[in-house]
Amino acid sequence: MRVNYVGPLIQGMKHPVLKGYDLSRFGSTCYLVEVSEEAGVDGPLIEGDLLVVDEKAIAQHGDMVILERRGGHVLYNTHRMGGRLRLIPPFGPERSFFGKPEDICGVVVSQARRYAF
Image 1 (cartoon, rainbow, N blue to C red):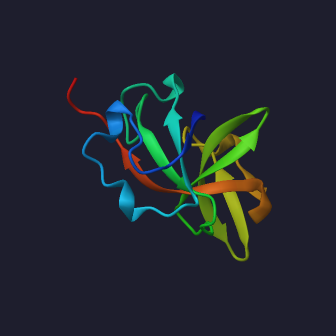
Image 2 (cartoon, rainbow, N blue to C red):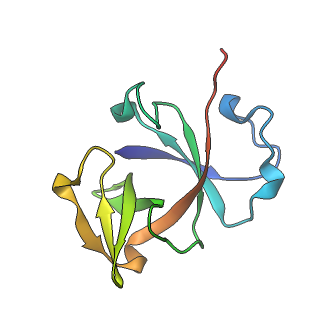
């Protein structure tokens, strides 16, 4: 699933989804991505969700991670198998592959969603 890079996470950042969100709990190694329309509006991630990504966090089993592929950023789930990390697209394992730690641009550490318009 594609995500769109928003920028580094900084105090005072103005974005409708972040209204009332405490940004002080995240470090300087965090940035934001926005979930693309590929996600639709049904499921744990929906179009327009913002994900806080820590580029220094180490991916573990069951994490959501961001990779840079084909000129854009994409979201994968992780599954640890022994000492290896399997990267699985959110829509199914058909296109999963074994990745290396250096393939990962960051680990999703939080999700923000705007509920009221």
